[in-house]
Image 1: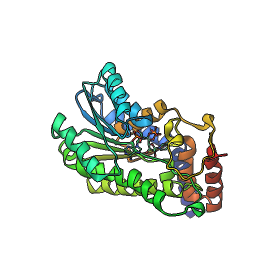
Image 2 (image 1 turned 90 degrees about the vertical axis):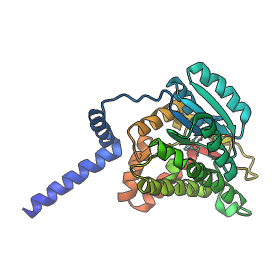
Image 3 (image 1 turned 90 degrees about the horizontal axis):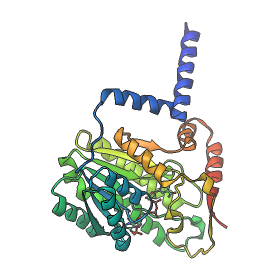
Length: 308
Ligand SMILES: NC(=O)c1ccc[n+]([C@@H]2O[C@H](COP(=O)([O-])OP(=O)(O)OC[C@H]3O[C@@H](n4cnc5c(N)ncnc54)[C@H](OP(=O)(O)O)[C@@H]3O)[C@@H](O)[C@H]2O)c1
């Protein structure tokens, strides 16, 4: 009897680990969700606030919601990019677009972003997409001081929670959804990315906690992409290292694919969505494999975008 139970337990454990690692479990969960929620998503007229919309993932999110005829608030520091994006969004079908110049590392700017949104579209926010972010790649042993390490927290972490704090009453009112664009580096730590990895781990920790705290009032989805082909690799915080970043494009996901997966994760109200098969496998492997193997995988992954 004992042997049979042990055998069944091991079999169940094996099936669970394989289906979790390959994404099969996720597909099953989504099928169940579809059966239970038959209505189609209708985002027409919904208020969607997107930070980091002047390029990359944030810009693509604004484009997709335009096709859904939403009311869109786009924010970033480069107002000229936002004004260009506004024209595209209106052409694509957005019902209204508001551009706000905003440096998320300044709390007053986060507050202003939300109050301008409320002024124009009323006191509800249906979706808050937090995509503003910068990278930092530098061996910590080469840092001269902590300025970049503080700056990256100000943008990637405090920027995200600053916008969230001021948007919370309006998100609550509409039972809204926050989606924060974290990274696989919010789950795994890569060498030479201490500052970036720390900021994304902080993001994951904060938003996982907030989701539980605000259960029933707002929804929170954390998406963790791997490498995505955007301007991101060229807009890292300056470290004085002028060597070119060599990127292996074949290892990068397109921004369209990243946004498609992000919006599916939001549709299915997933809590922490890990992108790429390698990422999904990695999360399971991290729990069961020896740390030295995980360190080896992390080191080889960091070579997909490296200074040469
Ligand atoms: N690309 C990747 O490989 C990758 C992988 C995993 C996660 N991510 C995450 O995805 C998010 C979006 O990145 P992306 O790939 O779309 O890169 P991107 O094209 O460089 O976009 C980054 C956006 O963040 C904005 N931003 C940067 N600093 C800001 C600040 N202080 N205040 C307000 N906005 C600021 C930029 O606008 P302005 O410069 O105009 O302000 C830009 O719109 C980031 O959080 C990043 O960490 C990216």
